Image (spheres, rainbow, N blue to C red):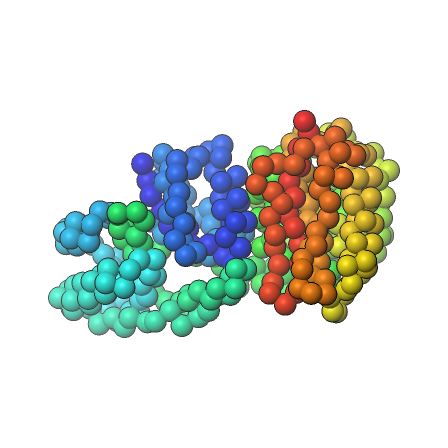
Length: 374
């Protein structure tokens, strides 16, 4: 059994759902536990550290080097090469998912160990901050760090290890910011698009449909994950923008099809999954009244019912979509009526969904729904 640490992004529930779906077929999770935003996960086999490039909700992945009580860990580390780099002067951080006394013991051990081995390192504090959806603030390291270690306590056991891979945020930002056409207020983020694609369980070379493709964010992320895609949008200018973005991404034209049509009437050949962000309604600058929110949600529900009834017979697997999650006056959040959608489409809501996705002061957030044929 192999143990790993997944350092999760701002939405723990969504990140966990993504990881479980991502590894389900190739290397299923045996068990896991959560400490702060750390997920200690056990697998039957070794995982590929490069898999982080295919995950949208994970900040970093660490490999457990030693586990047990602190004394056992220290004895194991005495026989292990802790720092494998070539620089004499380097900086490092220690992620703490444990108790202060355990952290202090590990910190002092590394300090003495590096001094004994004639290194001249600098331990850095976790000076960055990640704002979690729960409202908690989590300390994270500065990007310019040579080495990262972690200590985690789960139950009666401690786990020490090293970070082996991190999300390349600069590459994601480049992909998002430098493409020919962007829709800042309307488009889904590449991060969330990737999470939803993984939750769909689309297979490699499987066919994904986005019935509201807009400028092609979901299509682009799916192509990067080695899927084939069909993008549909009744807005011809949006569809042309999607075409420009996919051509800019140098994707094989045989791997994508773009259709200028209304998704409630379009005819498509068989596909594996749907992943989409429909129109979430008008842009709201302030929380609306309950009545206005209900009108927006009513319109959204009817749109989705029409589209799902049209496409469901051609979809083999999961249907993953976002829905508006509206903050109304009085700070209450209001989402769409899932029961109405399932009863009028004959689909079933997958256990564990919807999952809320929003920021603290956001007027319109999202709920992530997963539905399947009965």
